[in-house]
Amino acid sequence: MDKLWKVVDILNIKIIGVGKLKEKYFKAGIAEYAKRLGRYCKFEIVEVPDEKAPESLSQAEMDEVMAKEGARILDKIKDREYVYALAIKGKERTSEEFAKEINKLTTYGHSDITFVIGGSLGLSPAVLKRADTQISFGRFTLPHQLMRLVLSEQIYRAFTIINGLPYHK
Image (cartoon, rainbow, N blue to C red):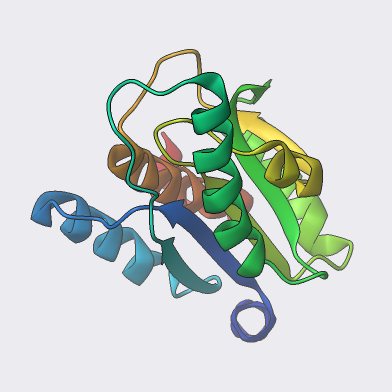
């Protein structure tokens, strides 16, 4: 048990998301996983403002929106952080593979792990370039607010797999 508490003191997991979480049920779900994750790490969600944009945008306007949101995201990432960018073209992983990857990162000195969820247009090239890896949760398009909840649950699931707890079954 002592080893577990030492990990909590040094492991930081952060989700950066574009836009404000509005629905109470998403907030409640994320709060529950944040509470559960408190046994394993310091868990935090950082929201950056989304860029207001009309329905139909030219490619140049879309690039400008992504660039502005990307700059806000990059402003929240420190040099030492290992960054996962959530992207449809990213690599899909099973829950077990994800757990193994998180365990390996923490074993080999990565105590600050950050996940980035972009806005409705996705992530800017600058954010994708900064990312250490890209991860995909499939080819479905999910609301960004729901993705925060799904990601929080998968991070918690990873820690239960790493610690051999029955939650995963």
